[in-house]
Image (cartoon, rainbow, N blue to C red; front, side, top):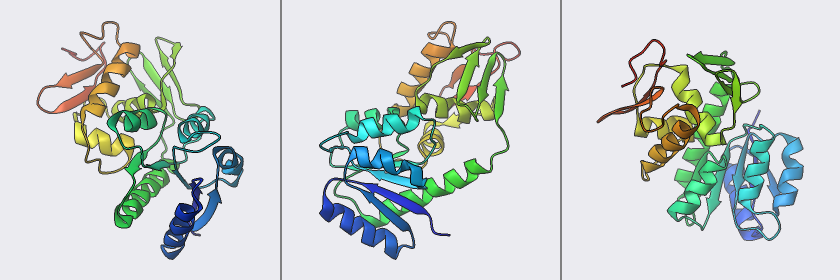
Length: 234
């Protein structure tokens, strides 16, 4: 069965071109011309959403936020002319999985879509629903994270970052690897995005973020997650 792609853009010339491209690539296509219409079409359970940001009623940012607030894990690829770093960071923080600026190469767009769909398929068959390391527990079914049995609130990307790290405690992840595993594709931008998210996550899970004992830096390599009770978190 063909994957179902939802295109969200108020520019009909763009949606027509993308719909033709995706159909030729073998995808089933649905189109929404506004943010409100996109939220209504979530009931059709798309496999991936290609989402514009600048729309007249509900912005792509708000659409993304509302989708993630419903704990939907549908992959979201933001496709927009707003490609400044701060725009990308905001979109990714709100839960987008990929961000591609206009104009774009169709080959890159299709490659990113394939990567997101592959990752989504793998996650659908993941058999780990409860992940625990020391006093932190993560439930993948409910997206609930607890620290010392107290629930903590994480943004979608903070949650995704923690999930990747806690699955393999003690393993060192390079920044490029985290960008690929958390954001779902080969990201050629500034790896400081990872550092920003690590700092934000530390502020929520560390007793002293300045001296982290759970989410530790490995100089010259990247980061690893550790059990502060049994491991040396220096």
